[in-house]
Length: 419
Ligand code: DSN
Image (cartoon, rainbow, N blue to C red; front, side, top):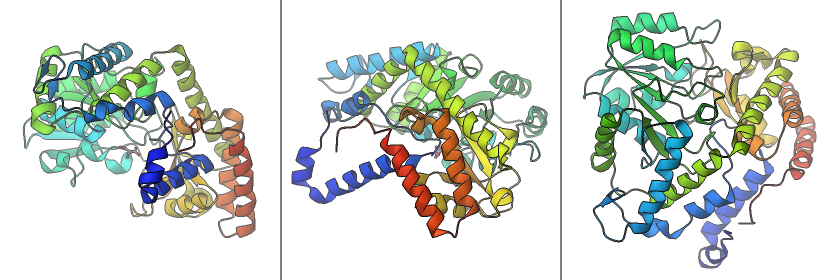
């Protein structure tokens, strides 16, 4: 149990910020596609005394004494993760998804080599070659997007770009793509042009380990992920591969090339997360995540609201609020925040708005599914969103919806001790 009692007495100012954040999480419908609510067991491991330990190196080969217990925890995390994705090699030390991507890329290619990744505005990630990221500064980066009509990845187009660019590395994976990704096809393209394939499965990892989506491990040379999205663990990164020799190289890039001491309390919490994800109940959760995303997508489409790709295969959907409601994504985000719905503005394929405004919003189902929402509640959220975005200037209507949301949330308390 974590009750923050000492914190409350010792540092009331900081304590207030945590308490306020707890209330915010409790009082809002959380639809940010990359967020989730971790279990109390994950939180306990994360808040444990494992944080006190320096353990540079890997289990059995540390540069400090006294690592016997963190070795047990890190080995549990590694073995559970291997089992979860049926992988021969894993590294659980990356502090974040971006650090995992940096290590994987550095292990595969040389400074100045060519990367081909999904563009940020089509749903890719900063670390897949964005010019302001290390991945766009240290390497020559090229992008593929999605078809602006269908919103789908056009594999023939990816193949064409790859054969022109001749990248040393192709990156597949996205932060805002609502459909299944064909990793097998990406590997065929990579083989055709002599490139490595890296898959960043951060958003959809929960589907990949439950057979609800193709598992990228058999197809990619290296796979990266975060642990805090659909996997529902602590904030952090992981790297997986079936190539044990490549794994030895990746280990050296994670430590000592790009990181120092691992966060052993986070690794302990990752071990708890993987244990949870190996249980049958987790697959049921992931099925519900998808059913909920599809339920809300259907409400939008039945009411004439444009959903990119006309639906979703996973935990997220993109809604074109510009053509549906005549407002920007930013306006939709701030309006929904007023009625206690949290989500983010997002570019849509062929977006003509500047990135600070966008024409769309991204809606994700993982967090509220953890909180217990099923299809009925997600349909209800869909109706609330439509009503609010059709009446952005009506204080009265927004107040009415906010009150209904409060009543709905009261039926689904957050399973946390009062912090
Ligand atoms: N920023 C994350 C997201 O929201 O998808 C990706 O790292």
